[in-house]
Image 1 (cartoon, rainbow, N blue to C red):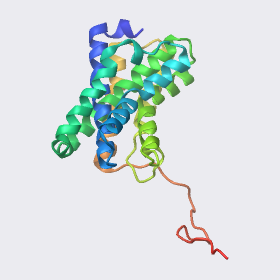
Image 2: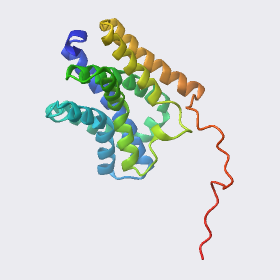
Image 3: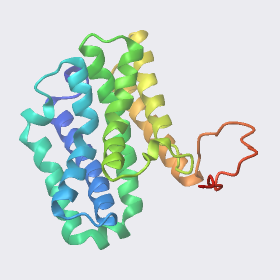
Image 4: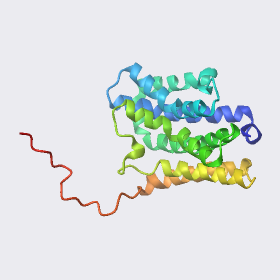
Length: 224
């Protein structure tokens, strides 16, 4: 199905662009954590390839694409070198990096959903794996860096929700036999624009209502 929507060369190029941008975010976090160059490379590889690797293992697409295409492995290393030598300059263009990251989010959630469906999963499971493809690497990155995953933090702009919307749109298009280059591109653009709007207006998911407690969150138990 992916081959019907995009030529192999276009699909491969889009994958590498998304991998590169995700890898930059992983390498930048490693710099902030004062990791050495090996730690930077690990976080870059995990961020860029973790979601797709998990998806491929779940659907039985083995060996995963990350291990059969040398470009998939080398692209995060290129991003690592870029950040290693030029991280002050990369930090200064963080807004541009975030924009490309949003584009990668849209591309990966759509491609992940389609690939999962191609391997026989139902629409709901396919959409779930599309979401995982888009955000799984970031979750692994944060766990390895000993941080609460951004996906779970209420004080971060919406990230998973745009990917959920993009994946759901693809699933609906498949359900009604309307998936084509136009509708798949529309799903990518929808996820992309939602993410940009979330960053621009700081949209965040709501927390539980009536969160007041008789015990302060800062209060610690008294030890004997």
